[in-house]
Image 1 (cartoon, helix red, strand yellow):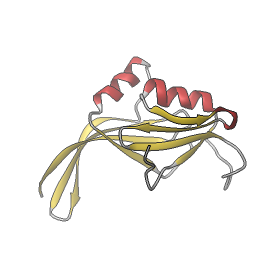
Image 2 (tube, rainbow, N blue to C red):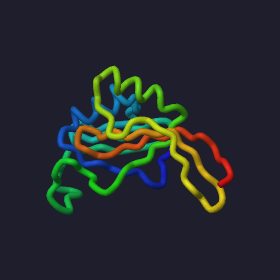
Image 3 (spheres, rainbow, N blue to C red):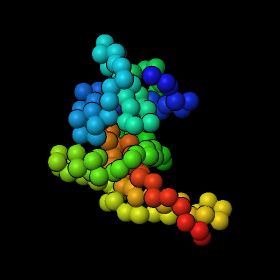
Length: 136
């Protein structure tokens, strides 16, 4: 396994619940885990995350739901439909319904079909499927 240069590590309130969400609903893969530490390194296609139940190692202040306020994690995937299917099958609510968005980069527009979902602790995940580019 090759480690990405940036791998967010999310403090979670329940390792068991978070692992279920990421593995069974979103279909991330466990790269490795340390059950005794309630920690797992997980991946989906080219994206990597670490989850660990709240401990005193990384605490910078009180965590209150929703966690991660002010950040969303964009996760580029080949196709968002399989992820949506898992969420729908499990009656898991979306934060923002799927839609096409075009973002300007200089004189080009970059297209994404994307949606947002909050994980069990409220971390905001934005799954994006690349739609290519078009002139501005």
